[in-house]
Length: 278
Image (tube, rainbow, N blue to C red; front, side):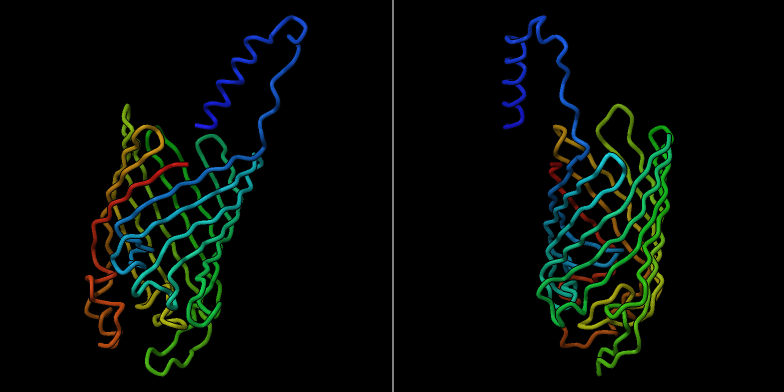
């Protein structure tokens, strides 16, 4: 509303003040930076197929500052609950920065992202970072994308015995994925598909934080969304993995409260979302 009022006042001032004397005045150059963001409500926070909110709702927000050169920085955050606390933290904060370049229908993107879990057990032991890269192409209403995230060997990804908590060295993790999007012509609706594969050492990191507790596995999701009044979007998704549920549950002690109370965190789930585009 503030922007709308400002724009109206500016146009009125111009219409009354314009004269041949100021005909040579040009508009000020546009800013080299753009700021974008969103605020979302999800019925479940799934990270690579695994629920980090223990099948509970999650509120998520993001903001990105981009320069016209292609460089950008940003932050993303979500609440956590149950098993997904990543060391008993109630919050995940991701900070990222990278470079994006578009040439015709092709876009290349790459950078680094840090995953931070404030006030979690073990202090900073659960924090880790990844290097990412992707390539996408736009063909009519279709967009295809291939990408990867590589987490070098680091403390948070080390394999720990869930009973003795003895450590078996630092480990790395690789996530490769493919995505496709279809913007339905003459509508504000779109269809989405995603499939990814996690490659990493089986086991749990410090305080039961891990990117691949069962080792390598596949995850996938399909969904659709619709944008209302330009800034409000609703979506529905179906998420699943090929992780054996019995094997997954057998890795946890019967006294653990983070698994099984609200269904499997690795099984199939319908997810609903409501997003406000800022």
